[in-house]
Amino acid sequence: MEALLAEETLVLDLPPLPEEVFRDLLAFGGLREEDKRAMRLDAERLLEGAASFVAGVYDHLSRHPGTAKALGWEGRVPEEELYLRRAFFSAWLARTLGVDTSAEFAREVYRAGLWHGGLGPKRAHIPPEYVGLSFAMVGRYVAERVRDARPWLVYLSAQEEVMRKGFDAALALKEGRTEVRFQALGLAYPAQPEPLLVRAETVGEALRKVFAVNPALRDLALEAVPSEEEVGLWLEPKTLYRLRPRWAVLLEGRDVRYLQGLATPLKSEDRLTLLPPGR
Image (cartoon, rainbow, N blue to C red; front, side, top):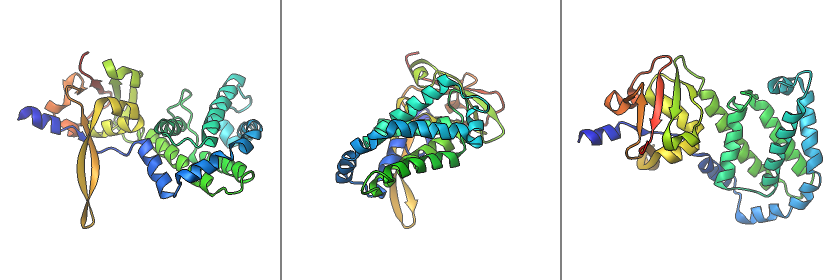
């Protein structure tokens, strides 16, 4: 009984995964399979000017004072970094013009939001209004070249929202007063190879923020728990998450299930460790 209660203390209420958000938004926008087939027929026309469009976007970003400052490009644009950014944008644009709606693509878009929120290699923070206007530039490029831009605008808007959620998740790591260090070991290490600094007052708050920014870690460490929540007069299905069997979260080496579970308070410079079995 004690072991069962200990397991139940680590049930987390987490935001939907990026692919779930993407799928729901596309359905809400009414993007049907026949729409996607028709959009793919636009690809050849859209690809004709894609290289010039990408070059123009980054020329604009490098010249605009706000984006140049955010990217660290004031005074001089590093050629190698410019090449890498254009390559990344080109790869994203190619997948977009191919109307990729896969779960893997949704996670890539979400990861771009995390990077814009300061979790990229340069830790640069790109203001969301610039990201939104960049999507608008893509929308204008498409609208000028296709007969029916409406499904494209639904598709791009859904991507923008997924990216924004990644951006918000990255910012949430820095909200709060108490900063702790999270690390993943063993089987979980490839999904989170570097320690992550997160501000949180309790173990539960820290874990919610960590698993929000790292869907791959959620896949490894957590399992879904079907549940329900009250919405007005009805009960709606809801998914909660708990640690997989024999996984543990340690606070300074102590299993939090035998402290106060998710309510265990944190203090500055504490170390949280995700420890899988088979270590």
